[in-house]
Image 1 (tube, helix red, strand yellow):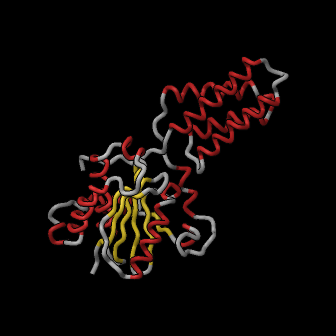
Image 2 (cartoon, one colour):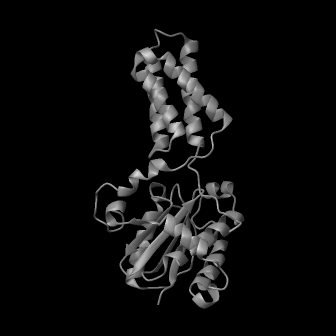
Image 3 (spheres, helix red, strand yellow):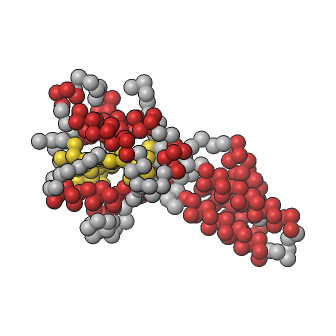
Length: 281
């Protein structure tokens, strides 16, 4: 029998579980699959925004948007279109019910325990195809999955988490840099212009100019470990200005360090763009 067995909502940046369905299933294979799901939840930021993973007799499907991940375990024969329609319903309800500030400030696991009731009711609906078919229109989801099918994860992709022993580099990493970033703000434009100016002023010093160019690149394009790279670039700017202390006056040093700090902040503030739901569908 095809059915949804378990579902959870997690915060993407750290895998903190925000809500989950109550599960009394003691099947060993399902419990093992849930361990895989827990491991995946801690690495959602490294994956494309829509993925599937086969785990024995079960499938793990998940989507992520606006800093929140929606995950589920279903039987291997459960239709993909129903699985992702189920996740889409969870996403729509969750982002309407809870604002981003509250999600980001959550400290304890299952801070939104009251959302479990919606997960339970939605799971019951999706496990009753007869009553479900009259309440939702799957045509749009079918078209979307056909045009942009979920990425199929494998043991090679996710490495050695929760019993997987493969250590090869993930094939999906090439997808990450194409992720869109949020719209550029006025302060971001100013920071980028000032950084280009710093790079031009340091053009004769080679490596020192590259740091400003790198920061501009990190601001404009998405990159894996983007924030860490920006902090390293800023650290190099500080070190280079310390090295050039005798060749520059205090105002010049202060200008370069301030611009470096400003664009580093803008890189941190410009988040990857989540897929906003279409409420007209």
